[in-house]
Length: 390
Ligand SMILES: NC(=O)c1ccc[n+]([C@@H]2O[C@H](COP(=O)([O-])OP(=O)(O)OC[C@H]3O[C@@H](n4cnc5c(N)ncnc54)[C@H](OP(=O)(O)O)[C@@H]3O)[C@@H](O)[C@H]2O)c1
Image 1: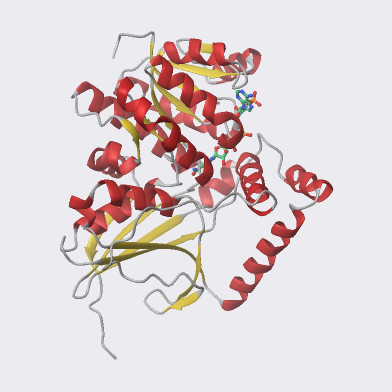
Image 2: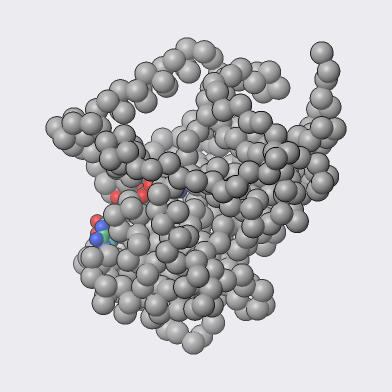
């Protein structure tokens, strides 16, 4: 771990999420014993951040995602680089490229499907050849869904076709950076008609997955399908680990709300956003609504909760994994990303690293589950109610 000046470099440290990740790393510095640097495009901002945390031992590296040389210089000094500078569709690719060129392991918190596909198709082979591990989606996107589905699938009989559904519930708010990223992704999808992303071949016995809005009687809540990045990550884990998921595996993900009126309200809001992103003036107005660098207050984050219930079924068995914790997007994301970096470091030291572009489950599996439980995130797999034939 000491072949380079820093064990971990945090790029994007000055952002709303980056600062929380910095705090999460600092909290663990004496337990985990690692050399840390923060990086970003603005040295003054980085210095005042370091000063505000009274952490003179932390290094500072200046790098801009538009300047390849600065990115390579930064990547060369790190064993593991963690990236919170988003939107990743704008700033991410050059950072991954610098890490692949410099032989630096890479983790991020993107939630952008197009970026995730691009990283896999462009860099998987290069990362394998360079002997490094690249892991996207190490935040609330997609750690609970990916780990929860893996734990659920492994508790079901391997040979039976499986249908797994994740139901997400939260009262959390989002940051300006998340909002900007989402608006940009919707704009690309609706105006530029970005091509539909393939999720790989389908086994003939794969159960049918109904992805419509429905009332889920087991939870007594309305379920709305979520076209987010998680299903892409979960299905990639399943394709790459058939010994855990079996050959015939279907996955669907839903956001749940307590009443039909909340469903209607959400649909109207989403439809309005899809309409407003089409025109320059209204899109710019949307961007200004939640400016970059801002986010939910500490009080709001303290009141926020999430619960992900991953229910898996075969013809004769039902199992569920429940993952729950505090504020998903920021407080818990900071925990997830920093613990993912430590889990990757453990694997590196123990020479158990899986190289290439990997999902959180492929790269970190049980090591990450154990670490998150230790950090207070509730994760439990148990038999679900028996199926009642009517
Ligand atoms: N997956 C998840 O669960 C999850 C959770 C939280 C956030 N996110 C994602 O993380 C990203 C960041 O969110 P946020 O709320 O923290 O955003 P933010 O507050 O706007 O922070 C953005 C960061 O990117 C940096 N940056 C911008 N342009 C750059 C450039 N050219 N070169 C280097 N750095 C640059 C900014 O630096 P300056 O300070 O110098 O402007 C800042 O540090 C978003 O894409 C969001 O969707 C994902």
